[in-house]
Amino acid sequence: MNHQQHRISNSNTKPVSLRILDKEYVVACPETECETLLASASYLSKKLQTVREGGKTVSNERMVVVSALNVIHEYFQYKQQESDNLQAINAYVQRLHSKIDLALIRIKS
Image 1: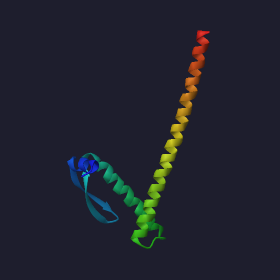
Image 2: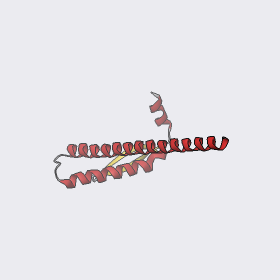
Image 3: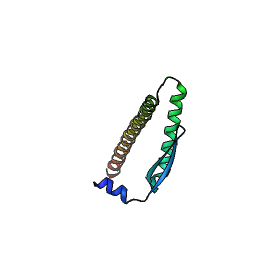
Image 4: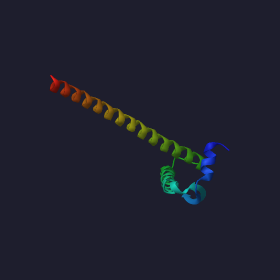
């Protein structure tokens, strides 16, 4: 048993019932992550429903793949935005440091 499996099997897990596209799935989940899992299942179900209502998808498999691609695309957009924001914050902090250094030099002279 690897470290990850050991950690999961020792945590307090409980069965969680998820409803996705009118089907029920029961999965084991650490108690501390149940709320996030339920929210994730709800989000996925909404994405699947959106793809289904689009009418261009014929099979459930294709619908799942398209929905998964949509979710991953949103995730990568979020990561890129987060990275861009972090870079902007770092640049702003660097400018503040430069201004403080300049102000300290002026005070000392």
